[in-house]
Length: 308
Ligand code: ARG
View 1 (cartoon, rainbow, N blue to C red):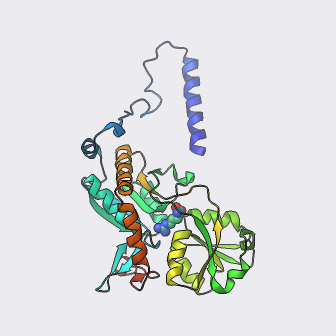
View 2 (cartoon, helix red, strand yellow):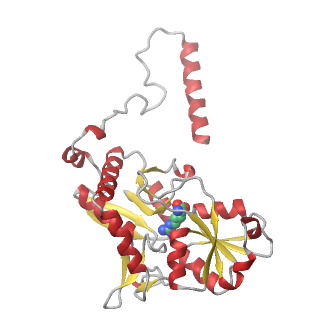
View 3 (cartoon, rainbow, N blue to C red):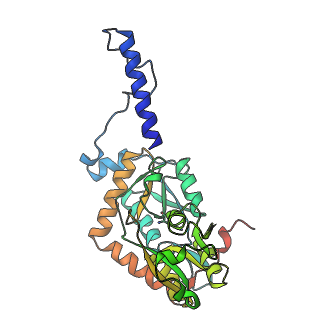
């Protein structure tokens, strides 16, 4: 909104300058800023897939760089494979591979904390952020949103012993309670909006929130419903007690701002993954992998953690 106002002000100033000049020379519109008028509008939607692929540019040619935050089963998480190694898994990771294949690019995924994915996208050090993004209007200045690839909702989560304390959202707003949410997420906004009088605790990872809930350090937390249910299936002490209203339903891929060709390519890949049944299959696989004892829910993947 501020950006928009600033733009209007700039335009107004440009207009008044023109008016004062009183000149009939309309050709010289390059004086007051680069960019204006030089932007070509290529219609990527009219291109064939092959034309589009040839038109797509990424940071490193031939590679699709993706930032993710693998603390978010069944979207993205670490699963333990047969040999005991932590592997990136989840339906959004399968979608990432699908998109890369669709566009003929080599996938390169970098795991990091959620707020880090937003910063990487903003600084354009990755082509995509795939971290269960909600299309939050506050993010529109730092990324472009793909079409929605998955529909989800929001929940308030606590532990079984406290489930009776929370019968409505008003119950969550209490100075006696510590309420968790992930740093940089829309759940942080939900916590501040619905539980402003509580001690709102922002943590870097959803898995930290789950750990703190189970340890009794938090009384409740805001977590996306499908994610909350996934962790609750593995940790039955968790109780998903309230549905939380939120306007921007669904999850999108974050595309490097202004890369219109890549955005079109990502949207075509998403449409194809929905159309050919892949998306449903990715979700089913991820749900299966996130339940049962192969999940590595609460611990960071060994080799990717920064401590070493
Ligand atoms: N949907 C929420 C948001 O966009 C939370 C996403 C958290 N993602 C994650 N991989 N931890 O803010």
